[in-house]
Length: 139
Image 1 (tube, rainbow, N blue to C red):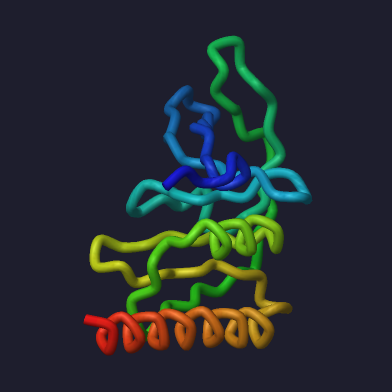
Image 2 (cartoon, rainbow, N blue to C red; image 1 turned 180 degrees about the vertical axis):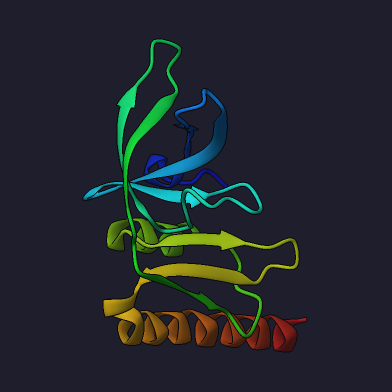
């Protein structure tokens, strides 16, 4: 399945004053860039933070500013297949989604839209359950 380009991350780089750097993944959203992945134990940046970036000559993005995102992660209570329409909806809303190896979905959303995000995730969970039930009957 090919996902919309809006959900493809770009490598980012945090450069510290001492010259050390830390690789992360950035996700383009309507308001700029969001941090989609950070190394374990990172103290400089967190999942969902807003990033101000500049492009380096090698194509990587250097983070020049970070603003806390105030995000919360919701996790699905059932397996939800990574369907293109769901991926498109997540991208259109500017939310960050990631499936684990078992098919469960984690969605990072701004705190202010948490109730709406819970309703959206409930809808997709119900759709996945109905689809599995119908497939079971058809078998």
